[in-house]
Amino acid sequence: MRFKRHISAAFAATLLVMASLAGTAAKAEPYVLMEIDSGKILAEEDATKRWYPASLTKLMTAYTVLRAVEKGQIQMNSPVTISAKATREPPSKIGLPAGTVLTFEEALKIIMVKSANDISTSIAESLAGSTYGFATLMNEEAKRLGMTGSNFVNAHGLFAARQYTTARDMAILTRALRTEFAQYDWLYRIEGLTVGEKRYPNYNYLLGRFRGADGMKTGYVCESGFNLVATATRNGRTLAAVVLGAPGQVERAALAATLLEKGFANETDGTPTPVAMYAQRPEDMEPANLRSTVCSPEVVKARIDRGDDENVLIEASQFVTARATEPQFQVVRFGADGPASTAPKYADVPIPTPRPDYRPEPQPVAAEAAQGG
Image (cartoon, rainbow, N blue to C red; front, side, top):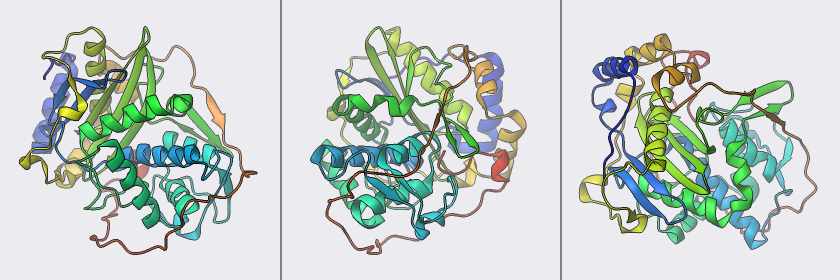
């Protein structure tokens, strides 16, 4: 099921430039548009193609935590302790010192807004005893949900060859989060956080700029390109757009906005189909690797020269407007007074997979999105 994309002439010209630089990366862009209540896909492109999730992984991390709360293994005020191992994770990160304690609730806020890899690792260790054990729990939950095209080996989404998902599976996970744990919907629409003296705005450019936007999560590593799960609610109807492999932050948000707008206007083609009916095709099994194109020096420079921020997005998409109000920042609080996790603990057993590729970006992180966000 396809739909007709509506973009400005200026943005179309930019896309042509990006496409010529990025080559096949600009063509590789799976997406899904789904209605949350019914679980039906309204539009899709390569919905079952395996893809590296990047920090969309943190939605699975959040789901695993919320399931542990539901099982009584932890409470939202149970402690998450920053370990020495967690402090060594690459950016995106908060940089809290080892030994710092905060609650699972505060930790979930941080990974949803800042997409902090150090906090994700600390969540995994505090709940399951190790990142390996937490990944085991993630895969158990994914299997239970019917996420047949997914596998997880870490809680943050930094590149690992055996960590992959599909747009279909991310839609299934999004629906599970929004229907099973609706009381925590507020986690995905936090506009920004204050941690000590630092302020961190949400990477999701649609919040406050697209009518009805209420979540959920961004993701980026060089191998995946720019991913986004975006949700919006209008007149009691919630839609979710999953975009994988976009060439920039602007492109992923612009495509998600177009998908959502057309969905609300009922302008998608084809008959809505239950998400579970999409079966993986043989050609979908090997994840695309976009590092050589998305993170080539030429493409990174083009993104920086053009700008890859909300201001460019507003010019690019007729469905996105400037914020009417300043973003609201929540203060992250430290300490925890809840009981420690009673979930089964696992030793930190090495997973038989190639060492994750954490090579630095070809441009300074300050000028380009850090991996994870």
